[in-house]
Image 1 (tube, rainbow, N blue to C red):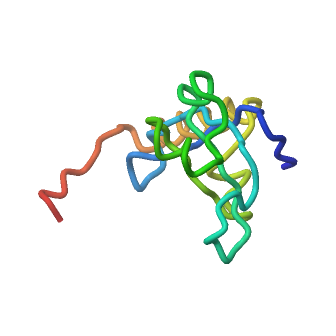
Image 2 (cartoon, helix red, strand yellow):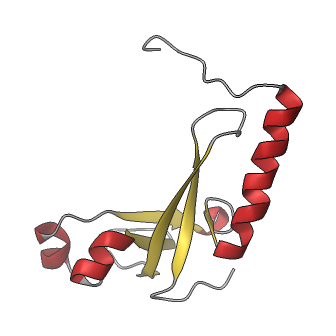
Length: 113
């Protein structure tokens, strides 16, 4: 996937180990290796609300002064945990099929474990 600064992508998370309950969060790609303390190649994404309200949070003073979320992903996570809009239907349909195959969609309560 060819990431483009300023484009919106979607972070995929799951609530269950069976990968039947996807969480989809829009994020904006703000650049690679934007913080100097990193030793590895990372791709950075900012939450869409703060991006629209304040702009890109790549400068430390701006990042610390606004309420924003900046997350990083490694190369192998792009295309899996971070996807483009056109991939969302395929991901959601895969989850729907898993739920149908299982016959239910329940979270297991771990009681603090």
